[in-house]
Structures are given as C-alpha cells and as structure tokens.
Image (cartoon, rainbow, N blue to C red; front, side, top):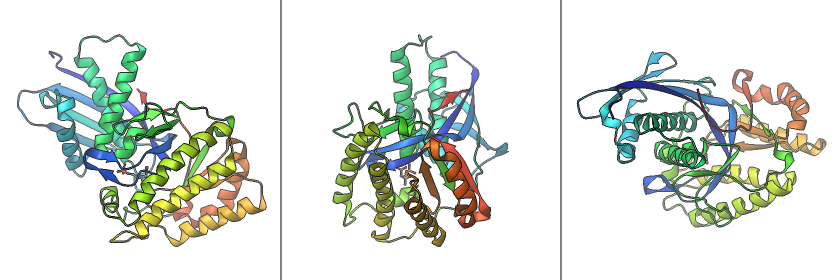
Length: 351
Ligand code: PMV
C-alpha cells in the first residue's frame, strides 16, 4: 500500500464468562466452549497511529494512560509475531499505541480481554484503510468482526469474546450453530426479557496482582485428574444455558452460573501445584448473597474470574434493592469499599 500514515481508534469492553474457559491446547485453542456477557462500561480505549517505515522488524511504542509503557511490550511483540501471517503489513509500519482503561488499573480486573480486543480491532481498521476501498456491506462486517475476534484470541483467549455483544460463544459446541474454536460468535439463540440489561456489579475484594497468571492457570489443566470430566461438563452447561436463556428461568440460570464459578476454583484447588484464589472476603460475600436470596425473592447470583473479586449478577428490575444491599452490606468486604457498577453491553465501538 502507498498510504504513509493514519490513525484509528476503538473502545472495546471486558466480558464475564458464565461458562468458563479454563484449559487450552496449542495456538490458543480452548479445551472447552465458553459463553460470556459482554460488559458495557468496563472498556479499554486504544488509538493506533501507523507511520510507514522502510526497515524490517516490528516497531511500536506503547503509551498507557498517557505514559510510555515498557511492561506491555513483550506481550505485544509476541502477539505481533503470532498474527504476522494474517496481517502482512505489520513490518511496514511503525505503530504508536495509546491506550487507557475506563476502570482503575489496579483494580484486579483483567484488562487483557478489553486490551487485546481493542488492539485487534485497530489492526482490522488499519487493514481496511490500507486495502482497496471496501463496501461496508453485511458480508464485510462479518469478515471484519470474525477476523478481529480471531486475532484477539491469539492475544488472549477470552479477548475473542469482547468484539460483539450481548452474549458471545467461543468454542465448538453441538448446540450452537456456527460456533468455532477459532473465534467468538454472537449468541443468536432466543434470549428472554429477564436478561435484558442484566446487571453486573464487580466487587473489588483484592486489587493486587494476580497470584496465578492465566497462562499458568490454563497449563494446570494439562494432566489434571478431573480435566476430561470438566471439559464435558462445560459442553453440557452451555447446552443447558441455551435453553435457560430462552425460557428466562432465573433459578436454573443461578445454578449453572454459580456452579461454573466454583468449578473454576475447584479446578485450581485440585491441580498440581494447587492454588486458592479466593480470599476470606470472597467467601463472606458469597454467604451474604446466599442469605439475601433466602430471605428475599431476589435472583441475585455471583460469578468469579481467576481471582478473589466477585461479579454480582442480577436482573435490571432488582437494581435499586440490590444496590442498596451491596452498599450496606457487601461493600464492607471490598478493598476500600470499592465496587464498579456495570451491565451487559453491545460490544466494541469505533471512535
Ligand atoms: O483469556 P485468558 O487466557 O486470560 O483466560 C481467562 C479465563 C477466565 O477468565 C478465568 C475464564 C473465562 O472464560 O473468561
């Protein structure tokens, strides 16, 4: 291409898995399918400026929240190496990557999903600008989203579920037509009105560095004594969840979602080496949520990532009551009383 320079910008959200991805094969191929809610407000905003250069080799600078950042460089270098065969222009340009998060960076919220998907989308926009003018038809949009998700997967597995909303499936599964191990697909099944604007309040129990990186975490599933059963269970849970999303059965939803979260942690507790990633306050919160559900008719439930923070999920119509409960009771178990209110979102946006 003879384009010398340009600039593109995307905002891409985080996502929270309902059926968890835990365990992968080579090339970021998941051992089991997963499904997630795309979030709305927890986002990474990334601007990529590209300038033509002559020399070979990758060249890029990263600015995080306005300051030059060296810590992210190796990750991006590895990412570029992995995706170069799909993005042949990478060595022809110098990239300035300016990125920031809408959530506090020391919150313990994984920013790899939003961060990697934002970069993948920027690269797709650059690919588009460098190629012959494309008509913005439906087929092109499908190609764009699918390849963005494919690239994001090679950055961080769960990032492939952040391109679209509101529910995204990643990993081949019999009950999901068009599902793939290579990229996330928008969940096209029926979704009951109960799930409209579903809420996710993230309770920040531990804002520290992750005790176990997800790379190490996935490796724990190699030779794990319960691996085969777990991978089969994820397939079952996804098929069940598809039915539940259509029927709006919130009691059944709670059972699958909470069981998935505890199973993820059970896998970590029963691997070698073993880890406990929950904190005492994680358990306090879970018990409070269960007690609240007992004494009210609330459909509040929790899910967890590979850490101590708790995602509290609940229907929009319960928002006032649940936020009151969180403020009065659950916030006491959060670091500095800190929590983030979010809800299910529609996917990434070009800015
Ligand atoms: O995308 P990774 O490699 O950081 O893995 C994330 C895995 C979990 O967040 C624990 C579960 C999931 O499906 O998002």
